[in-house]
Structure formats: structure tokens, C-alpha cells
Image (cartoon, rainbow, N blue to C red; front, side, top):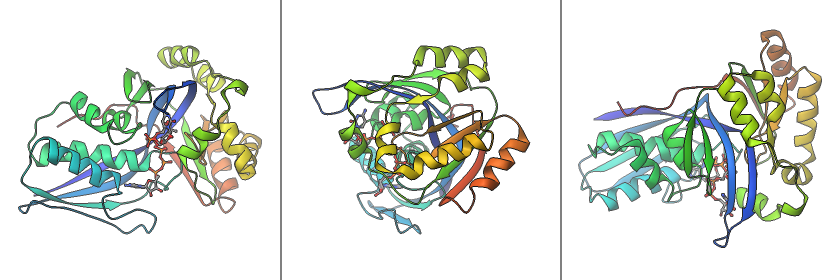
Length: 289
Ligand SMILES: C[C@](O)(CO)[C@H](O)COP(=O)(O)OP(=O)(O)OC[C@H]1O[C@@H](n2ccc(N)nc2=O)[C@H](O)[C@@H]1O
Ligand SMILES: Nc1ncnc2c1ncn2[C@@H]1O[C@H](COP(=O)(O)OP(=O)(O)OP(=O)(O)O)[C@@H](O)[C@H]1O
């Protein structure tokens, strides 16, 4: 038996850090949404008690360091599953880019194995298990649009944001999330207005969404990698309605409603960056069927 599951990337429409916690993590408030840029996970049921993993991408570990492997191991141990699985990962989401690629692969593996191993767990139960793998995994289990609190694992569903294009531009660098959080100086940040962002989404107010996007991690990565600021400037010059870095970066995204401007930004950035994508938001949550 074989299952093919999509693992979509996320962007952070807003990312606020409230304080550093005693456990070393940061207490966050983030508005996140899934986008139509996805890895493909192929799960094949094995009768032997083993987890095998493979990926063509040389930046993706093909052993227990892979977050999808960790997801399978966690489910297997917790529910004493005696069957095995072969996990094949076809990567489209850029790696170490602020788009939660590894987290989404792990979340898709949880959703898929729930079916393949007939575990009959709810999305809430899968999200709780996912939180043990990484802070973004719970959100990726649900997908759609949500407010994420705690260290990222406390999820409240939001309606889909107003329709627009998302143009993603990834510079020729990767970023370590732990390093960016470590360098964050909370005495010197300008906090996004999360409540206004949520209100704008609830009202379907595109202008409000554009006015309230913000990410406290952006300046940290911008200082480390000035090319991120250059990409932002170019997107604004080409007519973006709003521009922000996603997560800990370095990927930058533009929101734009007009097709002609989308084309201008997309064509203007191609060649200048490592990878450029023009995609839509997915809007809806994942279902378990
Ligand atoms: C930047 C974001 O991607 C935004 O969505 C997330 O906050 C990070 O999510 P993630 O990559 O799944 O994070 P994890 O794998 O749990 O943590 C990586 C490292 O980031 C730091 N970290 C992460 C989340 C958080 N709320 N506070 C932190 O300080 C910790 O040093 C941790 O060791
Ligand atoms: N399935 C996977 N896909 C990609 N990277 C993975 C995977 N599993 C583990 N990794 C490791 O995780 C690191 C971060 O990769 P990932 O693409 O998840 O970063 P990210 O998009 O910045 O994550 P986030 O936005 O959640 O902080 C990679 O350098 C890689 O070594």
C-alpha cells in the first residue's frame, strides 16, 4: 500500500516575540498561513519493523536527523506499531529558508501514517505529537491559517486571508533558526500588531493585512545578510503591496493583488535570486480523509 501526501510550505504574515522563556525557547505570537508550494511525501507500507527514508535533495538528511523520520519513529514508539514504512521525500520547498519545509514533511508524515498504520488519531492528537518534533510542526499538521502562540504549538484557527499572489524570493544563503533567535535583542524591536492583523483577516481587509505584516526576526537576518534587504527593496520598487521576510528567513515574500504587478516582480527577481516562486495561499485546513 502506497500513499502520496502534499506537504505545503508556510509563511508568517506576522511574527512577534514576547519574551525569552526559562526553557530557552521564545514565547511567540505568529499569524501563519500555508501556501501552494509543497513537497511530496510518498509513504509505502512495509511488513518489516523498520523506517526507511530517502530524498534526492543533497541538503536533506536521509537518516534519523530527518524530521519526517522522527515523526514516524515517535508514532511507532508511542503506539507500538509493528509495521514499517518507506518514506520518499520529493523536495520543492527550499531548505533552511524560513518556509518550514522540514516541519511540513514531518506533519505530512504524521497525517499519512495515521492512515497507513490505521491509528485513528485526531488532528489535535497529531498536532500534540508534532510539537515534540519542532515548534512549527503543530501548525503544519492543521495547515490553513492560524494564530500560533506558546513556542508556536498553541494553534487557533483563523479564516483564509484575502486572495492575493505571494511571490517568494530566496537568496543564495541558508539561515539557522536557532542562531537568529539567539541574536535577537528584545530591548530593541518594533512589535507587529497581531490583534490588528487578525482583525484584518477576519474582515477580509487586504489593505489592513498589508499594513500589519511584521516580523521581529527580520532585522536580525537583515543585519547578517544585507542581500535580504536588497530583495525587499526590489520587490517594493516593482510594485509589491507589502513585503516581509518569512520566519527566520532568508526567504522574502511579497503580497500583491494585480496580475501585471505579480509578473513584473516575478520576472524582475528571477536570475537575481536563487529561487523565485509565484503562488497562492491555500486557505483551507487539512482534513483527515
Ligand atoms: C522561526 C519560525 O519558523 C517561525 O514560524 C519558528 O519560530 C521556528 O520553528 P522551528 O524551526 O520548528 O523551531 P524548533 O526546531 O522548535 O527550534 C529551533 C531553535 O529555534 C529556537 N526557538 C524556536 C522556537 C521558539 N519559539 N523559540 C526559540 O527560541 C530555539 O533555539 C530552538 O532550538
Ligand atoms: N525533511 C526535511 N526537509 C528539509 N530539511 C530537513 C528535513 N529534515 C531535517 N532537515 C534539516 O533541517 C534543517 C532546516 O530545514 P528546513 O527546511 O525545515 O528549515 P526552515 O524552513 O528554515 O524551517 P522553519 O521555518 O521551521 O524554521 C535543514 O538544514 C536540514 O538539515
